[in-house]
Length: 511
Ligand SMILES: Cc1cc2nc3c(=O)[nH]c(=O)nc-3n(C[C@H](O)[C@H](O)[C@H](O)COP(=O)(O)OP(=O)(O)OC[C@H]3O[C@@H](n4cnc5c(N)ncnc54)[C@H](O)[C@@H]3O)c2cc1C
Image (tube, rainbow, N blue to C red; front, top):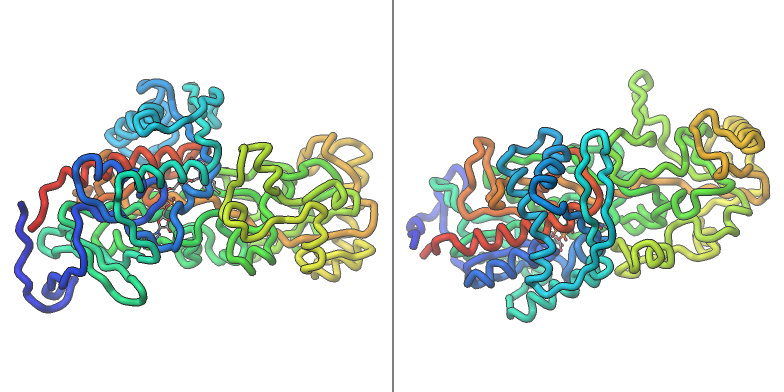
C-alpha cells in the first residue's frame, strides 16, 4: 500500500495539491474504448484488477471499430527485430524495438488465447525492399474493424467490466512531489467528476486526427481546411494534452498516415473524409487532376496511402510563399462519370476488404451514389458544357485548363505521358461533354504522435523516467515515428493495450 498526501487545500500545479473528493474509484482507469482500451481493460481485469473504462463518445470502437482490420505480424523474433529496427528509422531505442518485436510476433497467440478467429492471408513483401528483407505475414481479422471490435467488446462485456460512455477524461490527477498519477478528472453530464485510480491510468484515447490546431502545428501548417480524417471524431488529441500536462515527453508528432484524395466540399460539411478514393476507385480513363492554375501536378493514379515523401498536393513554393497545387480539382468527362462512382463505395470495400471501412461508411454518414447524380444535384460535382465554362465555374484560369486538357488529349493519342508517366493504358482523352470538376482534399487515416513510452507502456518524461502509474497504448504515442507499413497500428493497439493493462494491474495499490 502506498499512502496519499494529506488533503492540504490549494490548487494543483505549482501551488499546493488538493486531493479531490472522489466521486468513484477503481484499480485501473482506462481512457478510451478502442482496441488499445479494450485490450488494456481485458488484461488488467484478467490480472485481478478492478477496471473502469471511460469513453468520450456515445459509441465504442474509435478508429479500431472502423479500420480495415489488417494486421502485419513477423513470423519470428529475429526477423521482427530487423523489421522494426528498419521501420523505426532511428526514432526508437533498441529496448523498445525488442519489446515491440516480441509483442507483435505474439499477436497470433494473443488472438488464439482470446478465442478470436483469423486468417493468415499471405506473406506481404515489405514496402521498403531496400531497407528490409524480412517477410511478414498479413493476418486479416474477422474481416474488418466493425467485426473485430464486436469481438473485443464481447470479451469486455463477458468480464463485466464497467464502461462509462459520454464521459471524456479531462485531466490526470497527479501528486506534484512524486509525479504519481492517482486518478482522473472527467466530465459526465456536464459536470466534473473525480475518479480515483488505485493502481494506474492507461491512456488509450487515440490520436489527434480531429484537432486542427495540432495538425496545423505538427504536420500541415496553414492547410487544415484541405485535410479530413477518415476515422473516429472523438480522436481530438486529448491524450497528448493530458500527458503533456503531467510532464510526459511527446514524440512522433511529425508522423501521420495519409489516405487518398476525397471531395473537399462535403468533407468540410460533414467534418470528415467524404468521397474517399477519388482517382483510385477508377484509376483508368478520361480524368486528370489540376491545380488552381489549371495545370496537372502529379500522376493521377499514384497511391498516396501511407506515403512518407511530401505529397505533390502539399508542395510549397518558397519564392511565392504559397501552396500552388491547392486548391486542386479532378476534371473529367461524361464517359468517366458513366463508368461508375468516382469515389470508393461500400461495394468497392466489400470487394477489396470484405466489409465497410472508415467512419463515414461504417456509421452510414454518407454513401457516394453509383451514378454520381446525387453529388451533382448537391453541387459537390460541378458540371458545365465546355471546359471554358467549367474553368470559370471553379475559378481556374480557362486558357490554362483548356491547354492542359488539349495536351493531355494528345498524350493519350501517343499512349504516353511524358510529364507524369501515367501508364499508357490508363490514358483516355477528356472529350465527351458535359464536363465535371470536384474540388479535392486529402484524407488522413491516423496520427502517430503522443506521449513517449517504453516497452512496458509506461509514459516517460523528457529525462526518460517513467511517470509513476501512467501508461499509454495504441496510436497515442505509437512506436511509428516516420516509416510505416499499413497493418501495424491495429495490432500495436492490441499488443500494447495488453502490456499496459497487465503492468498497471501489477502496481501497488494506493490507499
Ligand atoms: C479507416 C481506417 C482504417 C484503418 N485500417 C487499418 C488497418 O487495416 N490496419 C492497421 O494496422 N491500422 C489501421 N488503421 C489504424 C488503426 O485502426 C488505429 O491506429 C488503431 O485501431 C488505434 O487504436 P486505439 O485503440 O489506439 O485508438 P482508437 O481505436 O481510435 O480508440 C480511441 C478511443 O478513445 C476515445 N477518446 C478520445 N479522447 C477521449 C477522452 N478524453 N476520454 C475518453 N475517451 C476518449 C475515442 O473516442 C476512441 O473511442 C486504420 C484507421 C482508420 C481510421
